Length: 123
Image (tube, rainbow, N blue to C red; front, side, top):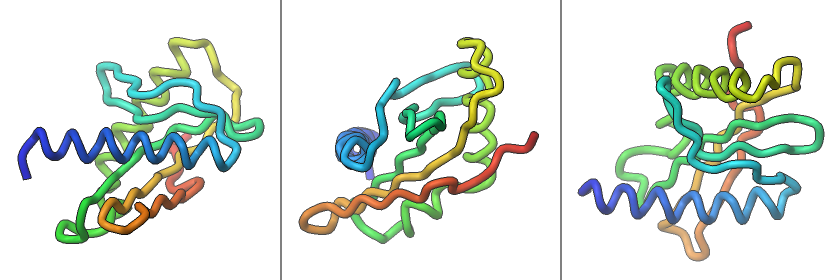
């Protein structure tokens, strides 16, 4: 798969994820937040919780489930980016969680699944 195909799949997945999250009561605050330590695909508020969301889209299951791609190393990068985001905005003390959204583009219609509280940050 080429870089262009991968980024096209990623953009399509993120668009579908945003729509699905909104339909499920999430208020989107920011997308594609980047900092030195990493990036966060979507930052949203769900009820009273600030949610950092990783989106993984797959056009086939050839490379496994989208959820399998959020391994321990990826989780550390997301957590570090979340810490940077919170520090930049002086948002300490707010309830946070980490969700993963898997987008299965090979289904008709595409299937979007949310795993809320998919992993934890170390204190």
